[in-house]
Amino acid sequence: MLSGFPTTNGFETDLGARVRTLRRERGLTLKGLGRLAGLSHPFLSQVERGLARPSVSSVERIAAALDVSVAHLWSPPRQGDAVRLVRAGEGAIAEHNGATYRELPGEPAAPTLREWTASNRRWPADSAVERGEVAVYVARGSVEVDVNGSVYELGEGDTLRFDGSLPHRMRRAGGTSTRALVVTS
Image: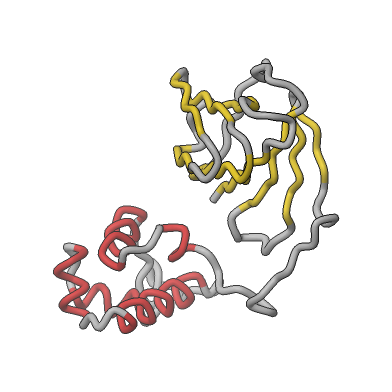
């Protein structure tokens, strides 16, 4: 119950079920999870049963104790098939500041995956800002990523992760076949 009224959106039940499943997978008791998260085991029991709505701080502590991201706890369970194949020709193409982004289709609450290529080596005029964490993985070639005024050089196989709320932009440093995968969660 929340503020004396039964919940109706299922959020608490879904979150609680994910916490319970992860706790059990890790062989933790409610008391054990409580010690790791710095929360009482009666409160965690209520969370697991969908009877309490934890604060953002409490969810962060639970996620850290379970060694998962907060997004993993907040996101709804996947609907339909657990496997999704995206073929090379699928996905919406968008041009922005000399770069091409191909959005790779996925579940609505899942991280956004975009394939990035650039036609030139100039910095975009505008920096991007977005919600969540951003990860840039260089699949081929090399790129430079400017995050809030600091430039990071990434080669093939390198990954850079950062808070998407920081102004950021990318440019190609390698040849014309340079490709990167940009993931926003």
